[in-house]
Image 1 (cartoon, helix red, strand yellow):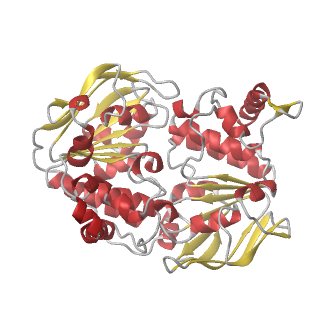
Image 2 (cartoon, rainbow, N blue to C red):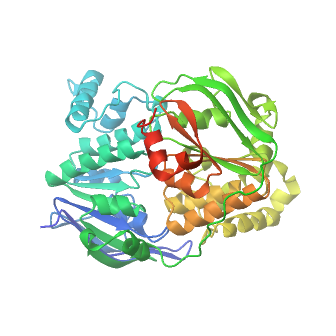
Length: 499
């Protein structure tokens, strides 16, 4: 008997005239990893949210162990044995890791008082069982993104679910963390857990999945054994032919220095430190820094954007200390910033898609322009159309799929011609078409004179984009020249296999 079975599921959003899921049948067997794939907006996340109780289908049934269920909330789905690990963090940042795992299921003394010691102990036992290393007493706000992902997975496991749903689980993980996650998933599969694995990464899917289901325009296009597919055939199923946006590498000499870090060092609990970082980015070039999780990429992002002041050294933009530039000027006129944490830093989830698209323009509208609404609407429309965001009118941004939310951020940040672009893990969660579109835009901005700094955990981003490449390992930055920047050498550099 299947662990879970969705039959004839249909979900229509009347406010946007969008058929998100159209008559889909989807089965999760015991002891299998079932990959759910498709382009952004294909309906994967909506189907997963229905299974996990976040959405109620218009028609169709959800059966757990052969019994039809009706979920009014995610808590109902949890009680039925459905664990969910979201693409974007749903943790309470002010609470400890252990408190987040116990949240809603807190152990109590005498049936009244919260037993924090027991919560910490239960967390430690779970971490030991599955090989996690997060400090149970560390506040989530101090953890790196990779560590937060571990806490999300532990919280789902702590509910004892028979079905585990993971939405883009490796989007912020490096190879080491991904391998550890896959080892865990295989142990869970062997124990009989049914796992739904949502991803765009073909190699990961073929490495971890037993079966693959492809969604397209809200419908289930096909389900196949992963062993019957290879990278090329799976990519063709996920993404229908798209134009090649690949451009030639930079052949002319870059311009003057736009961005520079001099002797930057940081110390951050829960994230790797930076050690005496020196780097510069000139007008008209793309510089890519590649690092696996836990090696300081988050710290570098915070220092480069002025969010965190380094303990030693300084960061300069256009020859000025970044801390001396007025924040509104920095964010609206100087830097285009695509953060790794799109939800926390890039979007206001309760606001409309249009409002999120024109956030950088808001300070410059007159009262009459804003009240009239025509100019803001026209500019929002232009920005969103430039990154192929459709069905956005009268919608909140948190109703979009994860990939389309990223398109909103990219469209807003990459309109115009700012002196500096800082893109952190810019392609995470994007399908091949959106990735090509984004990289084409970054190259175009470089060619028009912007300085582009890309911080990424994906070596392929450097191979596709970089005019100059750096590796970051244990907080130390190393430039890679010529043949050192090829795939094998880059992989060795970011894993510490080279001196």
